[in-house]
Amino acid sequence: APQEQRVYGLNACLALFALAGPCAAQGSGLTVYGGFRGGGSFLTEAEPQRSLSLDASAAGSIALDWGVDSARQVQLFASYQSTEIAASASTPAVPLDVSYLHLGGTNYFEGGIGRGAYVVGGLGATRMAPGLSGLSAEYFPSMNLGLGYQWPIAGPLSLRMEVRGYFTLVGSSSRLFCSGGCVLAIKGDGFTQVEGLLGLNV
Image (cartoon, rainbow, N blue to C red):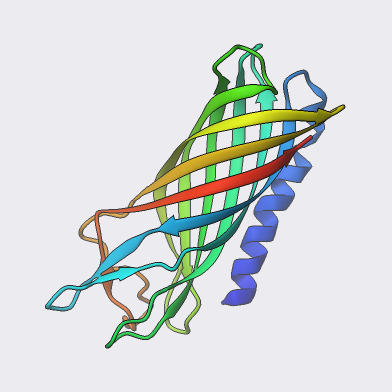
């Protein structure tokens, strides 16, 4: 249900904020991002098979980083997108919430946390929750990989700009979004998205 999906996203964000105490450590911090995410498609199970694509849309993310040394951080990253599977001549549009929860890290190229270019990535899970009655949410293993740049502003504040790619392992034998019956039967091996993010880091 839409209410359950909102609660899931809120709980993920609250969990990150609850862990924010250790952020006083050197090289640690909290980043809130706004982004725009595109990509992602599925194949219909019916013959002849057709490709169903997700609409590009805005996304929100939050990251909690712990400093490991002068150049590296461990990162807990959560992201949420509300989009829809685009309509076709025979298939109506289906609202779809896509959420990622990943554990990974950052590595700054020039060896100083909080300034300059870095590579970022993580492993975790993807939750796909369609917004139609009779369709159930699905969970899959996933990863993200990206490049970023961080600019100090003043005091503890800085800006982060990133480009991240997300890959979700769906499995070719999966029948997605079924609960009792399949209003929409789709399948696929992998699910890929790309996103540009702009964040405020504290």
